[in-house]
Image (cartoon, rainbow, N blue to C red; front, side, top):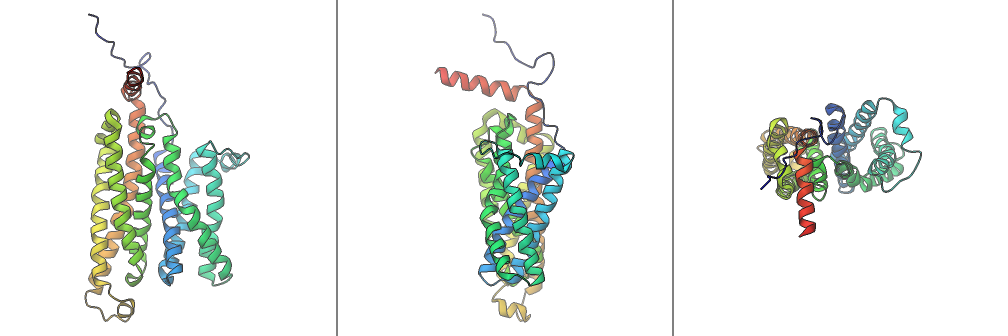
Length: 316
């Protein structure tokens, strides 16, 4: 006859300590890492298929994004020595340690690739650096999802199966957005395809993730996180549609370069708009996921109720 106790918290305190990371630094680190890794894949594709302008834009984007990403991470850590301290050991079971080594290997490759392209020297070395950065690119895009999922924060941990796919799609769409905005329209065919496929993966995986989360999915539907994620959904979907539309006026690269294709200006404007939408949508997604995680850690219900459900499932 005694009703089940409704747990709130210990002495009015949260069960978990909410992440103390600075939102601009860490959420910016997440989205810039995705942009860098995705751009390295596009750079390798452009290099291999004879699209030099696309390759150069993607290489520059990868180098700039990973530099800013590392700067944001070090700024949050407080001083560079804390990042270097993580390289004293090799611990494959630690996503933070593995990610630190991954960044330490990827960043020099991305910088060497763009340096060789811009200077026109050491082309063989530049080609090798481009290929190496492309090999590490997918891991750079997704390892931050593994890093978040390895914490006890409910909104991040409950999505451990699907969050890497969300970040993979987001990184692909961000890299495609940069290429669409900056590269010549005639060379953006791979970027347009990456935009459509990346947007489909991002939106589909995110819907699947929240459907599997149960109660914890509420944090994605409230407050700042909901506004950011809703904006991300609209911008990413709209950017993918514009990217596909921009391709209808591209035609053959030779005609476009000589200015003989009617609708070239219209296609260029659509490509720039698509690029801006995709870049902004990718950033909004990462910031939304970050704020959802903080909100889930601050409410004890999202920690205790799923634990009880798992205990009852095991007992059954």
